[in-house]
Image (cartoon, rainbow over all chains, first blue to last red; front, top):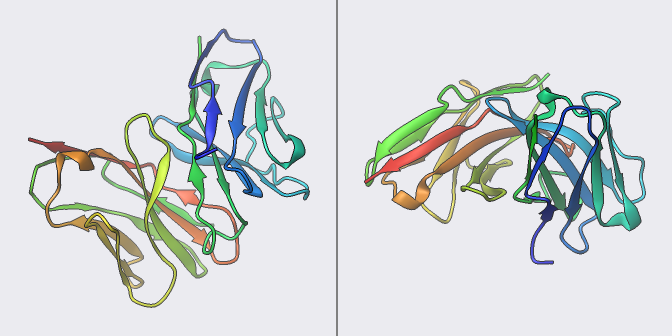
Length: 116
Length: 113
């Protein structure tokens, strides 16, 4: 596609439910990133995929969070047993390669998650 | 560990006035520096970046930022803002040879008519 696509754009869920957030990166981009944007907190790195390599999951805040990337393209971020503190905007980005100096990260518009 | 501080959470400014958005960073190693802009309901877009060389970098829409190593700053400036510059601006650093950004908390620029 022309840009990074995320769906849904907004998600309202009840505490304790599971949610899945989808990211469709720019075609051909091998690197994919998930970030969380909380009010007043800036962007927090969550997870990074690069080709077929093992993902860097060091930013995931708890074991309720997981992500996968199928076929080197679409990625899904899953949050199990959602809590109110999970409410945030979840941003996905993709790039041709991994080093930031040489590869611009292109961001999607995000999914705004509200946990009631 | 690296960190980025954007002291101003909101900056209101009148149209055609100059603006400066402040960014200070902390790092024990060499870093790359970036400014991203987020327009309402859109993703972040790269505005400009400092990798090496000239400490003054410019964007295509009139913004500029200057890397000041001694003050560990990378402030963003524009001599005359437009209504269309209303957006949130994020400063970010990245350690050389890595893929991770460390972002600041953002500054919301509101340009008033």
